[in-house]
Amino acid sequence: MKDIRNFSIIAHIDHGKSTLSDRLIQAGHIIADRDFKDQILDSMDIERERGITIKSNTVCLPYQAADGRTYTLNLIDTPGHVDFCYEVSRALASCEGALLLIDASQGVEAQTLANLMLAMEHDLEIIPVINKIDLPSADIERVKNQIKDDLGLDASTAMLVSAKEGIGISELMEAIVAKLPPPKGDPEAPLQALIFDSHYDPYRGTIVHFRIFQGRIKAGDRIRFMSNNQTYKVEEVGYFQIVRKPQKELAAGEVGYMIAGIKTISDTRCGDTVTLADQPCEAPLPGFRDAKPVVFASIYPVSADEYEDLAEALEKYKLNDASLIYEKDSSAALGFGFRCGFLGLLHLEVVQERLEREYDQSIILTVPSVQYKIILNDGTEMIIDNPAHYPDPTTIDHTLEPYIRASIIVPDRYMGAVMKLCMDRRGVNKNYQYLTSSRLEMIFELPLSEVIYDFYDKLKSVTQGYGSFDYEITEYRSSKLVKLDILINGERVDALSQLVHEERAYTRARVACDKLQEEIPRQQFKIAIQGAIGGKIISRSTVNAFRKDVTAKCYGGDITRKRKLLEKQKKGKKRMKMVGQVELPQSAFLAVLKTDSD
View 1 (cartoon, rainbow, N blue to C red):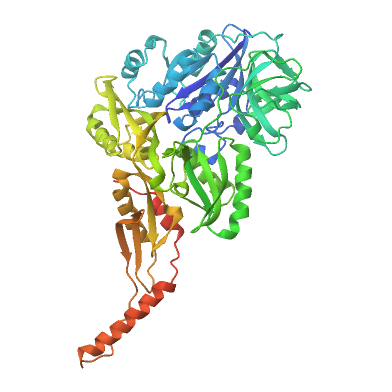
View 2 (view 1 turned 90 degrees about the vertical axis):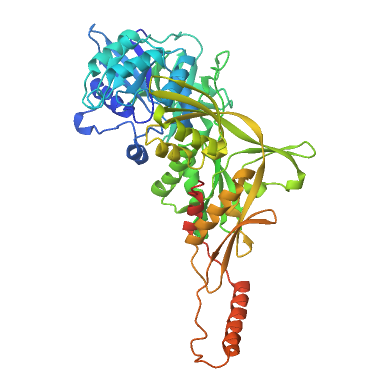
């Protein structure tokens, strides 16, 4: 165990985490140069395109140190986005140390701080690493001052590397061996292991990624998951070295994988404790909780006869992503579909893109919503995330909506723009402090429903890309909610309904009506698009009809002749409006989804 080092790399998005992982893997010589490709741990197309890590990976690196000993370095990769905060915390619980990666040109950002706090909660040894030192815009002294002043770490121990150019990698490997502590644990004690991730293999079932704290495990052992008391027989254990390398057994302090014929990925919960069925440990490891979705939206197939294909695609997708929850749903406008719960907006986008690319599905997403608590007059509490389930307003005593504590780090010249953006979204400025002479951290309390639309895009726009954003959900607060319905030709379209705050209802309704007016094709009759709260119409747009000039054949004569023809046309249009159906194109739903609510 003295020769094992378990560590992870934590960083803000786009600070070079995947590139540094590539260089460490190359230094470990576990893969031939001809088989190597950039971002080797990012297995999905979306990860490569967006430059983010969505699914964490693990790799076991052998390393011959300067003292002549061979060490085993277990790199536990973590996602970088705020949506996957719980997965990051479980990965960090499996480590003894962390490399805190900071971009030499960008400096300390919001998720750098958030991830550092997570690492400190788990009492990890932290090595600050300044990356991208080869860039012309790199300002190493400024970043060192930020490490000392903002993070409270010893800046003199910061390692200087360029992951792209491979500068400083061997010194970093030596620092990992010298500064990070070896794991503790008793190989002879009852088995106690932490699941920090899992993925699905179509031939072998669920492959569990875990770290052993006590005891040992080998093929043939009967194991038990402590959260749901499921028992399985272990078929294979081993290390990840890009490919799976089976071993006879794994002991305390080691990180690896286990195959035990587990059919579905939802049986293996992130943060769960594994022990032996016949010789269990006394208590599970602390910190386990179920991943809770915070954003909800309905997914419908574009064509009704593709419903079965969508159901099959979601079932297969669920094998790879246990944090997605879904149930059957239906809509008068869109037919049958599924109501899904997501960890956040990025998770929603990832699910949508993967369904379209990997499973070849054409889908329509409804407007995302959050979970509201509704207290009725008789004192009962309802939790709703779907506008269709909103009760009669006369039965409601009061409503509560979730709030977040947002930490926004920006250069001080953008302070006014950020302040205006947050105030427009019903935010309350709780605090702000200067981290350096020109950068400040602003703390806001904001309703989650105002953030899930396009807040992040807007923040990037008003700060010209320099703003960084991190949030945590804090509590439910009283709020004046109303249900905004969209009526097309007098018919309610349930898939376009939204739950909005009373103050925002008029703006949302007006924008939605204007967007739909652009998208709905013209008919032979006028189409009224209305936004309504209950029976009260608050906004309206009209799609004008195609009109034939019925008076063209009248050359002079009495005006009553023209009037008679126009009246006849008017009656025809009215009759047509009564029997006419308005087809809503898919683009109309997408237009409302992308409402620019300012």
